[in-house]
Amino acid sequence: MLLALSMELALKAWLVFDRDDSEIERTHDLDKLFHMLSMESRARLDAQFKRTVAPRHPSFLHVDHSIGNVLFQHKDAFVHWRYIHEPKSTMFERAVFEATLEMVISEFRTRYRVEPVTERAF
Image 1 (cartoon, rainbow, N blue to C red):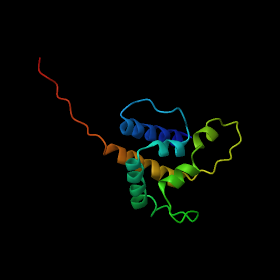
Image 2: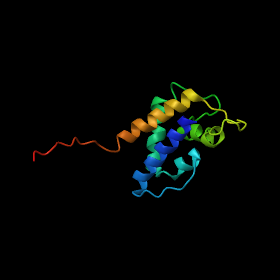
Image 3: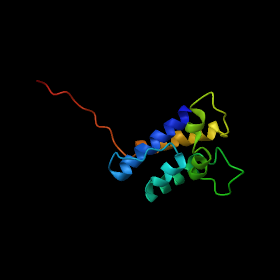
């Protein structure tokens, strides 16, 4: 459940950078969030997914295995898994999802830079 929530937050952070505002639609749907990204961001994430994640986690269900496939398959994971007493129907491929999340976060880090702040002498 926390992996799905982490992916949701990572995609929403991408959206803030893409849209240059903080008003993001309230949804947990990972597929919907991914498709709200700019075309450039989707292409960038998909290309990186195909370079780094897909070779280690091949899919026999999709000829063109993409980040879109992974996010669509797990789009409602947070909603389905957040309450332990509810029946679970979501198939969750933890290894591929975790690798995809790590890739999204790693790519996000390339969108900004961190500048060290030096203390001024008073």
